[in-house]
Length: 144
Image 1 (cartoon, rainbow, N blue to C red):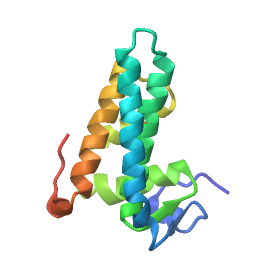
Image 2: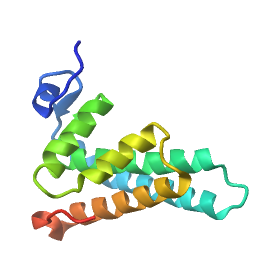
Image 3: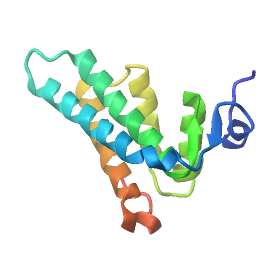
């Protein structure tokens, strides 16, 4: 199968599908994101903390946020590229999420962020995700 480059193509592929029960997993994903973010912060606070582990925990926190956002809209992914494209189509293009969060996620996935930068990016992504998914966030606009 060719590399999928659009949200619409993802919907026609086996890598993204509608799932009416996907939103039921959002709470679990947010708890996992908070856990990973806390683990990353603890690694930074520990002089013997491994910088690579800090980056991985930060990446995992962002990954949980990415999934939570897409799941909240009633989609489930079977591929990372379609997960990113779905988040872009559902949140970035409509102006609810700054694209820098997705760019930081992609850089973290490639371990191309310094540990402090990874933790800061994860913290910002988790905060924005919580804002977007709170009940009063139905009319949110782009914010950091």
